[in-house]
Each structure stands twice: as C-alpha cells, then as structure tokens.
Amino acid sequence: MYPYQLKSFEEYQQAYHQSVIDPEGFWANIAEHFYWRKKWDKVLEWDFKSPNIKWFAGGKLNITENCLDRHLGTLGNQPAIIWEPNEPDEHHRIITYRDLYNKVCQFANVLKNNGVKKGDRVCIYMGMIPELAIATLACARIGAIHSVVFGGFSAQSIADRIQDAQCSLVITCDGAFRGGKDIPLKSVIDDALIGCPTVKRVIVCTRTRTPVSMLKGRDVWWEDEIKQVETMGNPACPAEEMDAEDMLFILYTSGSTGKPKGVVHTCGGYMVYANYTFVNTFQYQPGEVYFCTADIGWITGHSYIAYGPLSAGATTLMFEGVPTYPDAGRLWDIVDKYRVNILYTAPTAIRSLMGYGLGPVNHKDLSSLRKLGSVGEPINEEAWHWFKDNIGKGRCPIVDTWWQTETGGIMITPIAGITPEKPGYATLPLPGVQPILVDENGKEVTGNNVSGNLCIKFPWPGMLRTTFGDHERFRKTYFSTYEGLYFTGDGCMRDEDGYYRITGRVDDVLNVSGHRIGTAEVENAINMHAGVVESAVVGYPHEIKGQGIYAFVIAERFTHDAELTKKDILQTVSRIIGPIAKPDKIQFVSGLPKTRSGKIMRRILRKIAEGEFDNLGDTSTLLEPAVVEEIKKGKL
Ligand code: WT7
Image 1 (cartoon, helix red, strand yellow):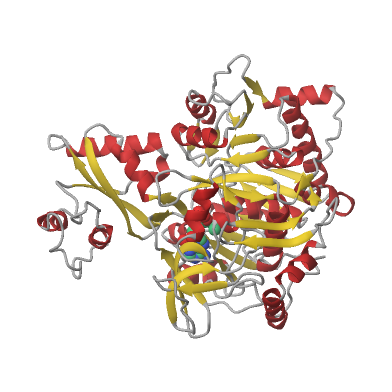
Image 2 (cartoon, rainbow, N blue to C red; image 1 turned 60 degrees about the vertical axis):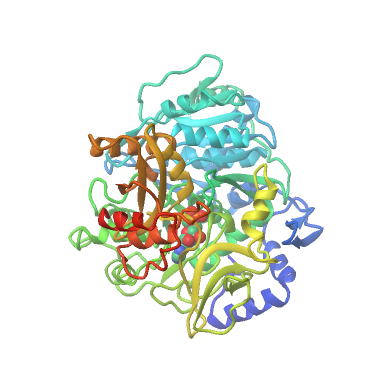
C-alpha cells in the first residue's frame, strides 16, 4: 500500500543516508506515488538567504484529488472520518470516502455560489464537527486558501487574523459543544466582523441551535445553501488545478512579537510531507483506526487529522469534546468503542488524566491499541511511563514527535516499532530532516552529549514558504539569527547515542497546555486594561499545563481591591486574546528589573517565577536593584 513505508531500522538508516546525499532524488521517489495532473519540472529550488524555497515547481495537482478521488475505486466504502460527538449518548457519524467526496464537492459548489474563487482567503471558525473538515477540503478543492482559527480565540484575535489575510468569507457554526460548555461561535464572529469590511459573506452551520442573529445580505445558513446545490442536481465539482507552490492554507501562530504571524503552507510539498510522515511515524496499516485528539484549529489537526491520514486513505477519528467530559475515562471509552489502533495525544492531556488515577482506565478494553503518540511539548518521564504502562499496557511503542506549525509535519521522532525510543526524547530525525545544534554565536556544536539551539540546515517539503503578506518578517524570524540555517526557537540536547531531546523554547514564546502563546501578546493584552502601567510576562513550570503564565504588573490604583483588579485583568486578556492566554498568576509590583537602557531583565523574572532566588546573577547594574527584593518577597 505504501511503498515508501520504512520497515526496519536498516531501511531507516539507508533512507536517511539517501535523503542527505540526494535529497531531490529521495523526495522525487516519494512524490511519484501521488496523483499529479502534471509532474514537476524541478524538484527543489532553494536559498535560505532571500529566502526562497520551492518544491516540485511546475507540478500541477489538487490535494483533494489525492485525499478523495484517488481512493474512491478501492476505498469508497471505507470510513474516512469517524466522528464522536461531545455527548456520549448522541449518535456518532461514520463518513465513508465516497460520502466525504460527495460532501466536499457539494460544499465546494456552495462556496462557488457564494463568489469564492481561487486564491481568495476563507476564515473558518468552527467546532470539531465533520463539517469543519468538509469546509477545509472544500476550500482546497476550489483553490481557496483556508485560515482556520481555533474556537478558543476571542473576537479581537479573529478580527486581527481576518484583516491580516483579507478574508472575503467566514464559515462558522451557531455554537460549539466542548465538554460542559456551549461556545457561541456565531456571536463571537459577529463581534469580530465589526472591524472586517473585507468579509462579504458568512456561512453558518447548525450545531447547538443557540439563537443567532443573521444579517440580511451577509449571513446564510449552511443547510440552505446545500439545498440550493441539491436543486441544481448536485453537480460534481471538478478540482481546481493548482501549482505545487500555490498556497494551500494560512495558519496563524504566535512568536516573540505581539502580532501572530500567518504561516503559509503550499499544496505540493505539504501534501507529500504530511503523508510521508504520517505513514512512517505511525506505521499506518490499511484498515487501522487512527485517533488524534488535537483540534483542527491547530497544525496537528491540519496535518494529522485531515491531510496526512486522508491522503493515505486512512480512517481518522474526530472527537468533538474534551478528555475529561463527562468523566476522565472518555478517551478510553472512545478507544474501546471504535477499537482504536493508534492514539496520538498531548502530554498535557496525559498529565491531567494521570491526576484522576487508574479508576477511569480500569475495566476499559484498550487491547486494540498498537501505537501511541505524543506531541506539542516535552513529555516528562513520569507521564511517558504512565502512558506506556497503563494505556499501552507495555506493548505499544510511543512516538514522541517534535515539530512545529512552521514545519508542516513531524521532524524528529521515533518511528513506531522501527527505530528505538527513549522516554523524554524525540530521538532521531526522519529521513529528509537535517538538524544541527549551534551555540549563541552560531557555531555548530558537533559530537554527542552536547546542547545548543536547534536549527535545520536543509529544506524539507513541508516547511513554511513565507509569512502571509510579510516576507521580510519570514526572513527575520527564521533565517536571520543564524546565517544559512532555519532557526526553530527551541533549545535541544543530543545525548551520547545521538538522540535529540527538545528542552523548550529559548525565545519569548510560551507553551501552555500545548498551546503556543507569545509573552509579548499577553503583555499587550494586560496593558490594554485601564490602570495598568506596565507588565512583564514569563513562563514557569506547571505540573499539568507544562508551562503556566506568570504576570508581573505595575498598576496605578489597585490597593483598594487587588483581587478585583486581577479578575478585571483576566477578563481583559480573555477579550483581547482568548481564555487560553489568561495568566495563572498575577503579582502586582511597584517596578520591574530593568537595565540602565530600560530593557526588562526577563531572565531575573523567570528565575523568580520558578522560585529560584539564588543565582539571579549580578543585579547591581540594574536601574533600581531594590525592586528585585520587593518582587522576591511578593512571589506567589
Ligand atoms: C513548539 C511548536 C507540533 C504541533 C503542535 C505544536 C514544542 C512540539 C514537541 C515535542 C518537545 C515540542 C516546541 C516547538 N514542541 N512538539 N515532541 N517535544 N517540544 O505546534 O504550536 O507550532 O509549537 O512546540 O517548543 O517549537 P506549535
């Protein structure tokens, strides 16, 4: 089924070697196994200075023909998506490849009827229902560029993203069910659209039946639009022919500045990479049921709920709810119910479920599980072993997959059952991935048992091509720190066996429950609150979330009711970014440690937030050394 699926450690080593000495030949051999309307003229064109990266230039394809059309003959009646609703007693849905093809074509025609054309940007703000996958694929079908925004972001965040991408249409739901909550998506969109004149149309899918306001001339119901297409006799929707380097989607992600950037992925390289990494990392076998617990609002959902599995003809399970609803046994019930073979989840979920003990795990039939995966943040050894022993019952390999929104797919990981695993380690790079460690001066750190900043020295097909509307920002962010290298922003060690262990971000980016949040963004939001003079935000180790958010805040008037002011600040952050960015701790201070030139010494604040009061370094050169003592005393 997958001629490029690696079957032994020797095959891995050979493939790796081949991918380094002849990257173009290596990837061309893999790309051969996809459906191209026209083959590429040139496999790779690159330079990390401009930067300019093109894979399979001149190749013509449509990713949905690879995810849908080409499977119809052999897999038409196979489940493409199994959907499990938020409430365990609501009926689940099974969507075969033929159903999915029909629904995508149908909705693609809806988009066309609503004026969407190739190259237009479409914002998608929906809960985890099959229509979300259908909407993204329908965009891809007609060459529209989707920008999915996670349901936990605020109206302001959505507006920023819509404006940046100049979206002309929004697809949303009346609301979304997530655990005990009912999120009023359409109402959030209504607030967002006040500042978005480019949006001419909103398509609203019914899910929660939450009352919504429908603006005449702008808002239409998904179901009505589908009926319209049905009265036209449900014509097929031929796939738009795309260039390999045409944009497929934009996904916004946080960096060290206040403004999230639109990471751009293109059609050809992304498809090949998402598929190759899916098929290999999880060693997917035809017929297996694969369950990734991420949300399609994040890159993990794009690559490993939708495009990777579907391009491989796999059965992908999509879950609307959360692991703790109605109780902490929900994931295990789902594994049991659908005989799940592969489970891909996040360390934060594992740690949170560990907290409930083995009660919710006992008596669940997990015998169908064959492979486990982890993604999004470093997995601590305790969580790794708990996952291995209690969920995998000691017989399932765990793949600790390191990658990023920018990389499009998995980069460093064990290959399930094929290459070695080691708790806490992402271990070895996949074929085609060339990691390199450098010191602060950009000098390569060679040999084993070393640490450094993680860079990648050669392009891979899944890498981002630009940041939307701002190529210079793309260059600055990823290629200017170390000349000739892609800088990941992560710190990393390489052990005596040459295995990689990612130690966390070295820039001002936090990873809270696997969600990526910029400290500058949170500071900007806090500073919006009336009465706040200045703030500094750092991360600190958090038992379940991995990192928690610690805010040091200088406020004008808070002494009369500090607790209320804290709540107001949380409310402000929720409004500006979304509930996911709310600080765990807010400490009011009278000043911040600054250098004489006025730069905040975050290193000191980080140490204090971690509770490490010794070795704060030399504080005598600070503008106001005394402030450090005050901050230490007030630590929460
Ligand atoms: C950052 C990327 C990759 C999809 C989800 C997150 C951290 C990711 C691991 C891992 C240690 C990890 C890194 C990376 N990260 N996976 N297996 N071990 N750290 O995507 O939001 O773009 O975040 O997540 O710090 O840079 P993202």
